Image 1 (tube, rainbow, N blue to C red):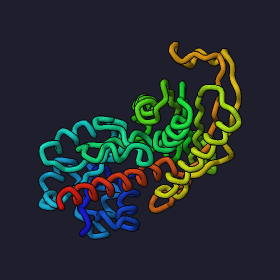
Image 2 (cartoon, rainbow, N blue to C red; image 1 turned 90 degrees about the vertical axis):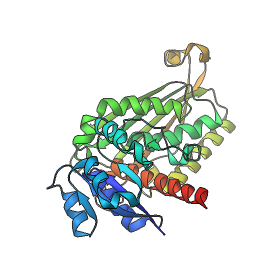
Image 3 (cartoon, rainbow, N blue to C red; image 1 turned 135 degrees about the vertical axis):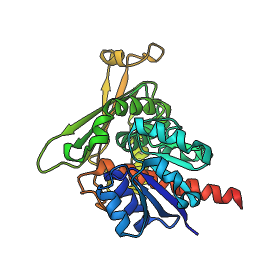
Image 4 (tube, rainbow, N blue to C red; image 1 turned 60 degrees about the vertical axis):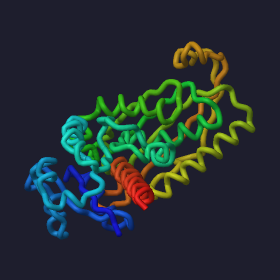
Amino acid sequence: MSAKAAIIGSGNIGTDLMFKIMRLSETLEMGVMVGIDPSSDGLARAARLGIATTADGVEGLIAMPEFKEIEVVFDATSAGAHRHNAAALAPFGKKIVDLTPAAIGPYVVPSVNLEQHLDAANVNMVTCGGQATIPVIAAINAESPVHYGEIVASISSKSAGPGTRANIDEFTETTSSAIVEVGGAARGKAIIVLNPAEPPMIMRDTVLCLVDRLTEDAQDRVAAAVRDRVAEVASYVPGYRLKQTVQFQDEGAEVSGLVGEDRKRGEYTRVSVFLEVEGAAHYLPEYAGNLDIMTSAALRVAERLVTTKEEVAS
């Protein structure tokens, strides 16, 4: 029997997630779509599909008779709104999957650390850039400790809605923190670029890592680890792929300023990985891979959380 889910946020991300649940999931089924704008397209689509809706936010959700059957709540609003929503939901014991940069709960990147947080009440999906790049940083770090990890997420300006634009500071802070906490880098930095190009570009991500000087054999192991991790992420985000082969460049003391004092070596290798994410176009256009990777990762996490809950109950 499928577990019922509610989505708070009837914008692009929430609506795309709704379609993913309906089309792809054998574990979840839609229970309620929640918004604050009665005229939003997401609420209208949900209503046409026979899904219960409310335009009264989280308070409206809690007041609905359907709420008692909800097992997992996705929050696709904003960092500020999630803090309010999480507090309102806390007494009810629902699993919460947070797609905002609020980071109230632990950071979760499915291919890296999902199994470590199956008992968490509220899990945070970091950011689109984090979901795209942290798996690669973690793969590199598993082969050679990453002294410094930097990511640049370039997305189409058209795919950056009001929520994304309002959360730019939170995006960089949350992603930088997760590069360290989840990816394993000693230091992390995140940059987001909104590209106004026409036609719109699909999401592109660049990962730059500084590690100790690598031999050719070590480079081969790192490249293989990256390819394996990319394939793992692509199992739940089909449009996720390497744009070109993993690049290696030896560096000297001139880059030591990026490295903490306790990790200064004088000889390093820079590992560069170039990725792109094409959206599945369930609701959003193909160029909105930044939103697609968030909803795909959130779906994978929620399905595992629900499965774990059922296993414990049995």
